[in-house]
Image 1 (cartoon, one colour):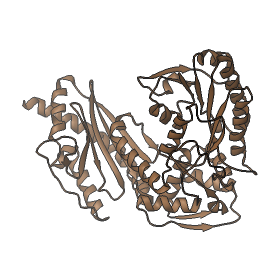
Image 2 (cartoon, rainbow, N blue to C red):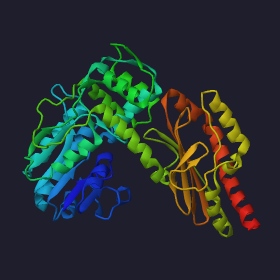
Image 3 (cartoon, rainbow, N blue to C red):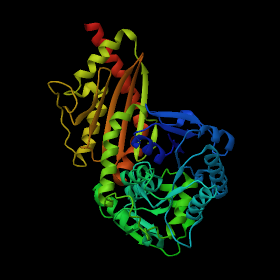
Image 4 (cartoon, rainbow, N blue to C red):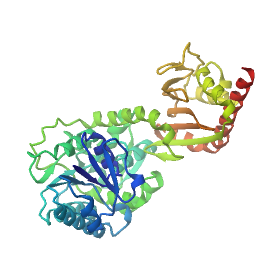
Length: 452
């Protein structure tokens, strides 16, 4: 069996999805661990060596994807203690191999990178063979480094940056990273340090410009200021991005260190994905996944997507009519619940070049064109619409009937500063309009039920 410690994190979730064998998912909270037919969840603290030893019984290979940056300034001490506990437990449980994801970099290292490499050494001290993969920035939605890149580039057409924008970095695509992690479990991959990365070595300046190009944004104006320290950089990053402050500060401290592959490992045989293609794939995959996960989103912003969810009561007697009404969408602004508000939105869009028209398809199904939307999700009790025709970014509108409630979700993946300003400006209005829209849907369902 394979165990994944840190299974609730970004990399852990991606890895578990990719593994096609039974997986033991380990984390402090069982409810935060990913689900799956081949997944067994165990809540355990990696600092509890005895409980961890019991949990690892029968495990052949254990992935260690734990880090404590979010815990504050003493993260290095926390990581050292946790790694030692895990190594002792793995040894006692008879684990045959530990696979660890660390960080690239040569001396002098930042506190963050030095800690990541120290963890690899601590894991190996107990005597269990360790395959340590060292990587730099991961290109993938949910990767903290990528999200910092996304928010900075999207929201700041002009940036004042310190000299770290000229630091070299060798990013790796999410799919390539996961492929390396899966491959590292094979017996022919020897224990030791393996440096992995994509085919492109860029500066952070180049990386931000490349993201802007792939996203269809104008070239960013970056002004270098030599006296701007990483500490000051952290303050303006915190102002612009919603990334955890403790984590962002540690990552920014590392931006002065080149993180490139100096000793490439030939054993994996994985064709690396160019950075531009990895960014494009990340954006496309995220777009395609939102329709399936829209009703699970919480209010706020996550991974560049703003979401607002509203739930209203739906009388059981009106449920069949509400389900029928999902199939009658399109062709009239009245279906959206507050026609005049949507008319104002269409007028606003015209000022920015939008040309939104009404259209009712002969049959509502996946792929149908409904007004300016495309049906991305559809079933007996739900519908999710998506549009790429808005000036402010890609938008989703969904309705789901669940028991005696109607859930409405609106989401926007803002594009550039204009998209971000649009969402912030209309958010107070949306708080009112979205609730009115949801209630109007219930009213429509009741009228339809009475007419039948």
